[in-house]
Length: 188
Ligand code: HEM
Ligand code: HEM
Image (cartoon, rainbow, N blue to C red; front, side, top):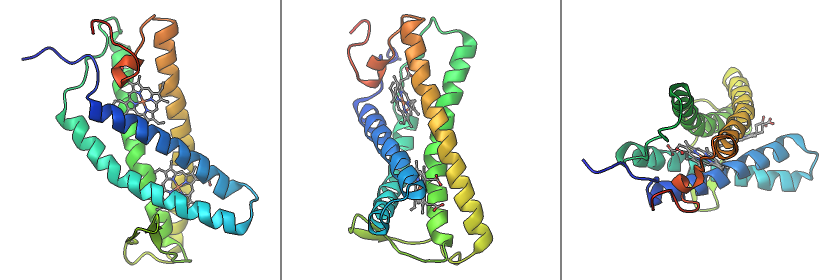
């Protein structure tokens, strides 16, 4: 068998960074539209934008999962201790769980909402609601709370993810960014 690659595949790298940017925009737009006192028309526009990008991220997740399961990934650095390897794998797994749980609960929020507003993805196509949920109060309350708390926990997960990369760079003198396409990997 060939040696394991030094970095993720080009496609996986592109997906990682495009989706990372998109998730950060989702967090920012969600926090602004749900918590700031902004004009109603602007709030409405941000809601439409948030729902549209969220639906695209829901679809992108399956592409990302397929790429992750099919392509070979670089092995974790040999100097990493076994518990660090376990923590890295668990952290990446959790990021995947959050990347699907957030859009699914968002979809549940709009499907169970008493307003029944359609989700038109960037004015391009209509994304259907989950059937038979419109106006269902218990589901609506559950979905809103779950979506909100998942989003807050996601911020903590992302912060931990970035902190791990920084810790490897500063303390272990190991730059992981080339593995995700930024700069050159050792031995390239
Ligand atoms: C904002 C949302 C982000 C998400 C959801 C995310 C998710 C992930 C996931 C799941 C992996 C594992 C590789 C895979 O299976 O695809 C990964 C790897 C990686 N991410 Fe992120 N990431 C995010 C942001 C960032 C940021 C801001 C940085 C900058 C420091 C970063 C740097 C890396 C690096 C260097 C790796 C490779 C780790 C390794 O050596 O294996 N990520 N990311
Ligand atoms: C893809 C990842 C997503 C992220 C990171 C995200 C993030 C957020 C955040 C941070 C909030 C504000 C929570 C608060 O402070 O109350 C929010 C609210 C909301 N999100 Fe998302 N969201 C995502 C996907 C979606 C999707 C796919 C939809 C619908 C199709 C959606 C619909 C909503 C709605 C309707 C609210 C307002 C809920 C309320 O008024 O309590 N979100 N989202």
